[in-house]
Image (cartoon, rainbow over all chains, first blue to last red; front, side, top):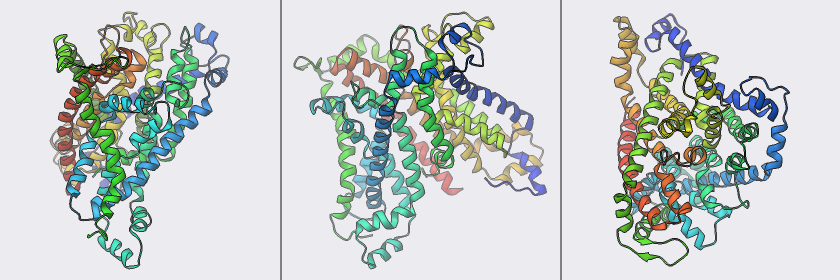
Length: 285
Length: 292
């Protein structure tokens, strides 16, 4: 969003809300969205006696990372985290590897049945996993795939949205590039992965990030597809911190929450432009 | 372009199409078939025709769940859209502070529903929660909000709106970029004040964006599950039993595969009608963005 600093910029107020209103909104938004995060961190560094005696005090006394040690002893954090990252990474990688050739065929090649194939992709855009989990669960139960990485990754290995977005991006790649590559004797697979793939890289990076974050965070599918510890993901483990035992020890739950959220927040901080752009629809149109 | 060999396009599409058909299209048919049986996963399934649907309708369960989910969605869409639009208009300014606040609001959309649900459960904890304590100081009743059948659902909607406001804000910010500056400057030179400029220039041009945000949020909140499973498990007194949670309850807690399948079929039907609205809004927005 370029902002010119010329004298005319003064009239640019035409677009914005009055300054006083903007400042008030910024303060309110800061309070409503930052205080909960702050409270999470403050609580996570309290001790149980401190939490009971002074639940509202804004400073932990003593400042104690004990809750994080408790999280580490209550669950195998490293293993859950590794499972989650492997799952989300495998899904994101598979989606890109499959969406690229599929999107290329839909955008660049003329063949009978193309409309039907594109129709299938569009129809699947409208079907969420929440509408299909009962039959898929029964199928996986019959195959004895419950509690396996396969049950977590395979249903999402192809992405209707990803295929759609890659197709849209490839529509604006000129045919001449593909024709030139063909003349040079490149195989179709080389063209897909080495020639046009790099051209639509921004779309692929957005897709990778959004997909990774979505599946890292996902609670629903791992909850349905796992019954034991074998491939438990971090969101499930953190949610279990609250369900365990009698009397909720909120400092431990908040420590778990911080462990769960910090990697995503760090990724967001690093790739903010990509994430906001893909969400705001830079890639959707 | 002509494919080099007739089988090339199909080879490129095969993995994607096979997975999509197996995991998203076939299951709808299977659910429709299973919904005609009574099955508890232990004994053999028994054909019962449309009894599962009849039972869901007769006990009022289906209508209750559908209306509850719609009500929740309406609150979430209304809340997230109005705060998202307000913040987009107010925070669309240069400067690091505004960028930081925008990022903070959006970050709630990026983190897990699990983290958001647990965080707000603690904030709303009946004994020691920050928000409950503040409400009590302000003179509100001391009953825990999530334990009150009248308040639990609206409170869940507020939590969801808190999470989704950042999404709405970011899309509205993108929409604001598409409004020609000259138009607003002309209105300002004509003496139109901020509110008049918003009503007569900004809002009409922002309508396709608003429709896009509304339909997307509607579909998202219609599929709500995580926040219910973690905070209230459908209680108190079924007051927060939303559609996906009801399906989950039927199959995993009551072991009624037939009922769960029947609910899935109805759920899919409702989503499909919502989604056709959504596609229309997406197209309208896309054509506007191409025109801009």
